[in-house]
Amino acid sequence: TMTSQIGDLTFSSMKRTFEVKDFSQILPGHGGILDRFDSILFNAMVFGILLHFIQWWWLSMKKICVLGVTGSIGQQTVDVVRHHRDEFEIVAMSAGKNIDLLEKIMNVIHAKHICVQKQEDMEYLQRKYKDVNFYCGQDGLIQIATFTQLDIVLNAIVGFAGLVTTMKAIQ
Image (tube, rainbow, N blue to C red; front, side, top):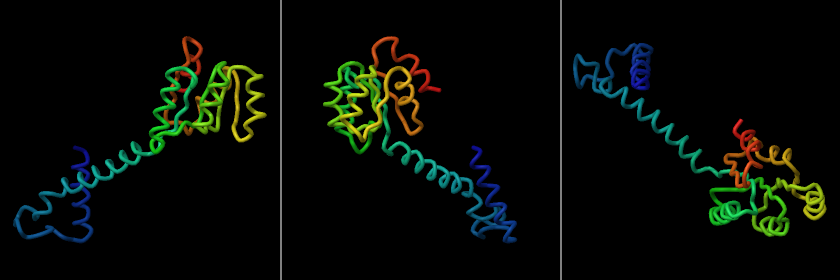
């Protein structure tokens, strides 16, 4: 692999820098025992760093936006997040017309960004929940789905209504 060649060149560069022909005399004429393993040692180091990075990314808290949180898929997502709070956090969510159910979900999931379908629902919620940012309509859906801090956007909106938002989130 490429990392093996880089490892080989790295150890050769070290030998030139310190003016050493061989790293040991165990295998005379072959550059020493370390020369047989320099590429393997470098690969192990690169693999360890890569594994650490993957583990850090994979095990870090995933920030989620749930579009359509009051529907069946949205409610199931809330249930999963509730049982795995160390792995997932819903930071944004949207609801259509079921404001009563949305408020029940808001008592369980403390998302800071919420989009509703109607302007009057947004105004009602803004008066009641001062510490939450509310949005409404298609523009609001696009705003919450395109936050840069999101790891996952789950679109549970029925039919064509969520298509534009999903396309914007992918961009």
